[in-house]
Image 1 (cartoon, one colour):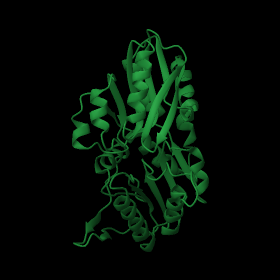
Image 2 (spheres, one colour):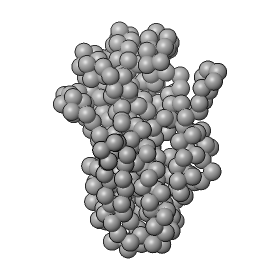
Image 3 (cartoon, one colour):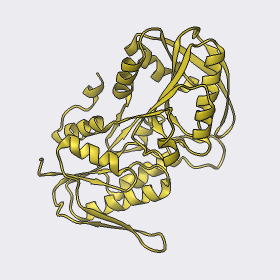
Image 4 (tube, one colour):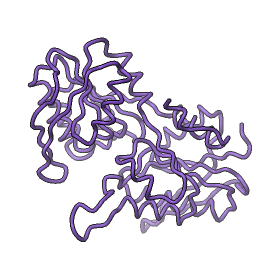
Length: 313
């Protein structure tokens, strides 16, 4: 047990926080996180954290605004309790898709969240698979952007043998898919996707050879599963033998589970950056992989002043 290291957890993903603490052989810090009858959040730190290195694990997933405010209040409480350094550990960074102005008179919400975290007293951020890498530049404090790649690649290696093709569901994910394909010594294909409206996508054509191959569609997150299921249909129609998928963040909102159940997908591998809702947890196609060791190792290295990037070399 490292005496000057304290780990706290918000209410968004307590199971992941417990697994991280088990990996670190470290007890979870004592904190009361309550809600007043009018919806206001109340935070109380139950132990002395003066001059301690504090890590707060909280995914800003649904309910996004509640979990974000809860994190900000925990950071402020720790800051006012004289913590030496506060690191916000966000396995899933909410608002990350709003990282640029896509129309006149709209906010850049990912930048605002970065400012809020910094003003609250955060000295470092650890997150995982940001929707866009440039979000790190929204912060004026150090950001460690981890990747679920080691966990997902190990799963793919263990479950799918030869004749694999990695599929990027859109042009934006090509770099990620290419890195996976290289590590797996697999082929690469791309979906030409046209989006007609937010959360609505239509897959058009498959660029690359998928005929008689086991296709694995790779994305950073699955929200309503519209893009994923359209891509799966396009790949299957192009002659793939089987279609599977994997992603880091299982947002799975709206009709996602119904779409996945009705699709030609044989499986969807996700990580536990976001806890699954009951209907998703009961879906036979979904496999959950834990990133607790990855997050725990990043915390140890950050605490000891060691390289975090070497985790992915």
